[in-house]
Length: 151
Image (cartoon, rainbow, N blue to C red; front, side, top):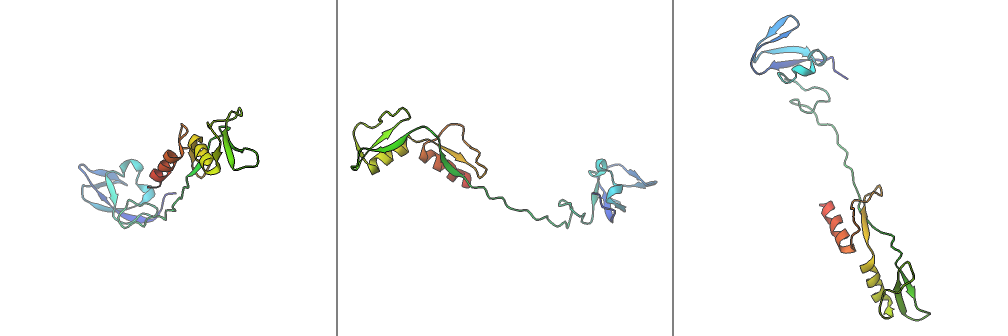
C-alpha cells in the first residue's frame, strides 16, 4: 500500500522532469507523496527522507527478519538388510531381503553391526522429510554432507 505522507525528493541525472505543472531540474529538491511518483520515475528521483517499509531509502528502519532453522538428519534407505541372531548364542548374521546370509562366517554382535552399517545406505533429509541427495550415500558420506550443509 502506497503512503500518502509527503516527503522530500531529489531529481538526479540529466534532463528535467515535468511534475504537477512544474519543471524539476537536475539536483532540485521538491516535495511529493510516494503515490504521486510513478514507479517508472523512481530511478531519476530519490527520496531524501525515509519511506515506511522501504529499506533502501536513507534512514530507513530494517524490518525484523526471522531466522529459519533447518535440521538435517540421516534416514536409512529401506534395502531389506537386517541382523539375525543365530540361535540363542552370541553369534549373528547379516541377511538380505531374500534371506541370503551376507557374511562368510558367524559374527559377534559388534562385528555384525559394523557390517550392517557398511551395507546400509542413507539419505540426508531436511526438517520437512525431503531427501537432499539423489543417490544413496554411505554413512560417512552422508554425515559429511550434513556437516557441509551446517557450515
